[in-house]
Length: 328
Image 1 (tube, helix red, strand yellow):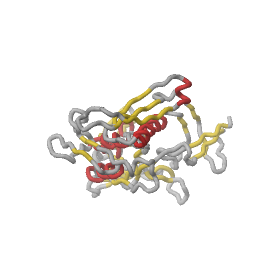
Image 2 (cartoon, helix red, strand yellow; image 1 turned 90 degrees about the vertical axis):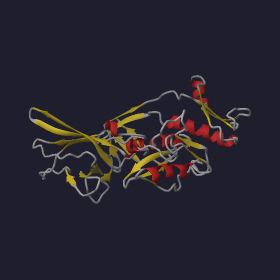
Image 3 (spheres, one colour; image 1 turned 120 degrees about the vertical axis):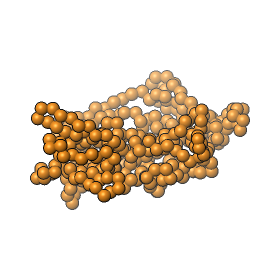
Image 4 (tube, helix red, strand yellow; image 1 turned 135 degrees about the horizontal axis):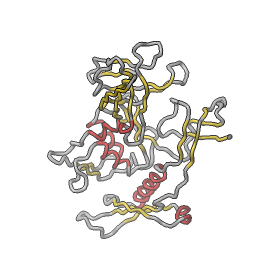
């Protein structure tokens, strides 16, 4: 656990090592969430000797697990110290560091692609991936990995009319806000990586299982134990999506073209609850159907299906697909 200054000239190593006098780590509670994380992320350091330095602005690439030649160690995407709180009580003095994640940085940096003062800019004849790449690589210190084989039929083909800082609709958007809106018209998600990079991932029901957890607590060869797992089943709401396109240049909707997505099983279980989205620049029904499907897929993917509590396992990552086998 080595903290490094912004200019990389100063470091403080507070790694967990029971044989080292520099070992100050009490607890690391650092979250990885789809669109943010720093609000809940803290690192706690012992400070009985008042020797912990001012670490505001320092960054750290946290390594989890045991540093061995086997698969027991993993480095998390970079985090930064936003604030430093000193606490004292009888027999205990510590420092609490509130951390910023890469997602938090995206949400702090304003988009300035257009002209002042509104910085409004309209992307046209540019694929969704290329817009994302421009937003991330032009205005932030981060990069976006090449798309590779991750393709939802939208990201590299759709060329939307995408307006950033459309005053009256979106005021002085951050890069994170613009990225979030843009991802909303795809079936993909953004994942922070080491090396100040982001990658796009496409979670699907048919994906192979990444990790298997099994109870009772005694681990089975090739598997990992878990303490508890809670499965949650909810109605899918909304269970119908309509996307309207073919808006006229004057802003009217003379000849509307509609894309649709329906979960008929959920509708029969309860009733039809619809959600509506405008996408005026699209004119083909197939493109609008794909947009409706993307919104429906995101509704399903972002429902909380379960909560698992496991012994520490540095292998599992955001958007991985775990399976819990209960033999209790």
